[in-house]
Length: 193
Image 1 (cartoon, rainbow, N blue to C red):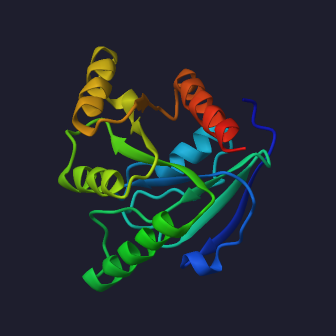
Image 2: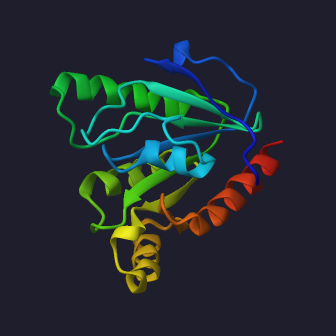
């Protein structure tokens, strides 16, 4: 898949404010600071399309991106650590659940997990919630450039065993990992039409 167009569409606080774009949608979920925005920027090869930050919890809204007029990425608030109150985190959680359960255009969730660390409790809880609600999902192991090359395959296989989902390695600087992720997205887009 060659990216010819990638455009930020809207930031919305809840599903009600999100337009129905009549395109297949991929909802990006993961812990705060796992690299969801970097994932979008690297995949479409446009620095700064999705705003990145070193501060966990910067994504507070549902951010939609039109890719090639073929599908949409929904960058959602992260779960886990963020410098916000418990009340705000609960609001994010409620908004996230509504979005994932009621947004009809979602063809798959993409759960991003930091490859540098063992699965965290909130990663496992999210994976269980996804299974419980019977939602389609695959996993992207981020930041694989920060672990030794010999550990990448074992890390991904370990995540697959623990989560029971396909896992794809991803690195924002080494683009050859992107093709398998694009192939998976393309396959799901075709199946949804």
